Image (cartoon, helix red, strand yellow):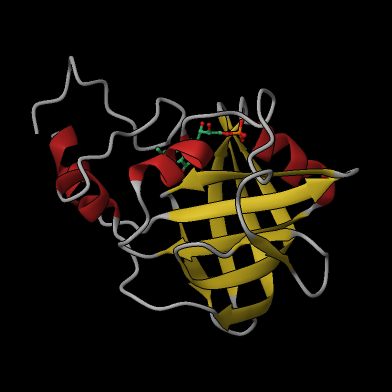
Length: 174
Ligand SMILES: Cc1cc2nc3c(=O)[nH]c(=O)nc-3n(C[C@H](O)[C@H](O)[C@H](O)COP(=O)(O)O)c2cc1C
């Protein structure tokens, strides 16, 4: 199997957020997308070590904010390289509350967002795959949605080891 073939897959750049018992948290995720139309459903894949995974399991709902190409590495770093177990990520980030579940939706560098109710959770070893029914969605910003490739090639961003698509730089050929 040529594992490099997987590197040709394309992804977006999202912030998955939720709230449970007063704790608001969010994390960067590139693995996610729409999987059905009626009703609209999305799937996301979260590492079990991430606080976001734990909170989404408990709250059974999440928001997904689609980042635009202007999002700076510092902003992405707050959500993608820090854990809500150590920091309050929404302390210095602007957000609005989702309509149904009152979950945070980060608004800076966000093109559009979805709010989803978890319908199913699949245990995938180190990860949980969540399937969520979209209960609200809106366009709240401008610009082009950032792709995972743009984040790497243009922004010079790195992937965090908890991401499902993480490749150890020591073993990567492509
Ligand atoms: C570009 C990028 C993509 C990522 N994609 C995912 C992903 O799809 N799923 C995941 O669980 N973690 C992903 N991560 C890692 C989490 O964002 C990271 O582990 C975060 O610190 C978890 O925060 P939390 O503990 O507050 O939930 C990604 C990180 C980066 C920088």
